[in-house]
Image (tube, rainbow, N blue to C red; front, side, top):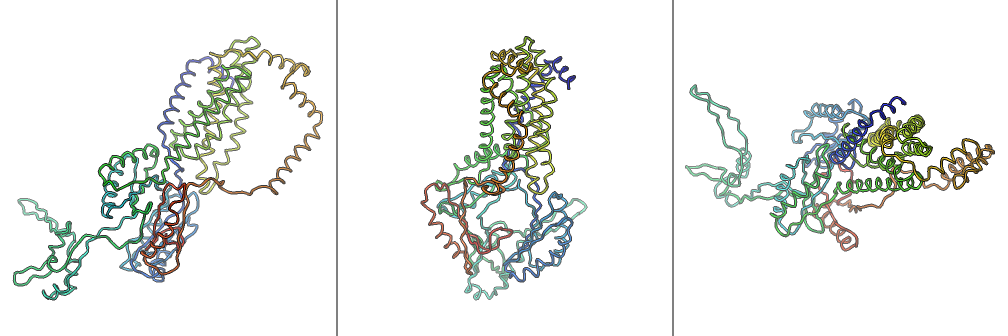
Length: 620
């Protein structure tokens, strides 16, 4: 270590240039590193859902779930399999052991689904396989509402979806509360009777059309002609012009027999915000995208598009994760500035303002160096990383303080700054290294934390190790080299030198002030080691006993002030979706007018639930 420090002092310009490049790289990384709320960790859960319109729960279990269970129960690494059969659908939840290979497990599940699919009934829809990914959770929900027709809401939502999905950091946009658009044919019985046409003939005429016919091509020798048989319905007129019957040169079309109109499927649920009908856009970001920049771009795009909407249409933003990240970044910056100011105040009072500036530089220098390394490793700036940086802020200046204090003492004895800081770094190198390594050993076992929590929390030890390692370089190389150029002895260092000389000579009575009081207290305790040991053991045992009797227990997350409250409306009656919505509206009416609520978003749940975690009797 001595050789490294001497080499650094011999190449002070190179070291300072390296320090400047480190600060620039760290500042650039801090501005450009992807920022997100929660770390992107693989959750060992895969969902499989199968839809079959109108199937009873008992038949769903027998015809849909059992074939799937037979193929899936032998999957490698499968920890638990849970299946749910309900009216109109079946769902299977597969939980794998932590640390699983997500891609390999997903491929294995899809292969098992493909093997079981031939055993499913003919009317079942194709099974859907999807994994749980924290990165695919919405980062922002934009809710469109207002006293406008439903078709206007759906049209605006689809146009807005296309705009938002063109933004660089957006992966996809899901529309909630949207009903599938359809064409409704209302047949006139009198017209059917007058033309002598049956209902079956009308139904077959519609079913046999709207099909893509691949006619291929004809090679005539003089050219190649691609054949196209127009059979796909694209407009409402295509439906009205469908031929149903031809007799004596007269063509009877659907226009002559029925009323055809555009409409929506029967509702499976309702959504409202502030009592107005609503359609929500759940926006998901791409993996590694900067959440703050992405949300800002989304809001700007919606703001530009809002000028084309009806005046009565309003948009409300919910679940904005960028606000949490911005708050955490603000807290981090405030903590760093506060730590630097407090450290500088303490050191100004003891070592002078020059040493305070040097020691204060160790905090942002260590932070920026650690962030630069994490950016190179492909990490994101998430809530765990930010918490780790705030946690470690008090540990970064210990080494720099020790080195600067010893150098200040040497300068007070008449040594030049270059020699004093070189001596301080070399003399205290191994104690500082031992102290830092001891702290790192506390966090090192957390790297091997197993399970989902371990995958989530591994960013804490990695951040602490990177930042403390950077602080070690600051304390032994960068700060001493910089101090050798700008260091000067402080005003109070002469009195400290007298105290050090008195301590080295053993004449402790000459030491005055607070230091003298501490030395005399320490001397009296050293003469009674047995009493001190018994007192320490008593404090240790007493603290354990006091926590066992008066402690508040153990919990994974501490209680915090909630930002969101949820009211669940339950009913066990066999009610329609309209009756469910009436019950939800009654509960909703009780909440209106309560002071302090920003937004009230209500949803009526009807029809199939998929992999919902809600209880079966929850209707909204």
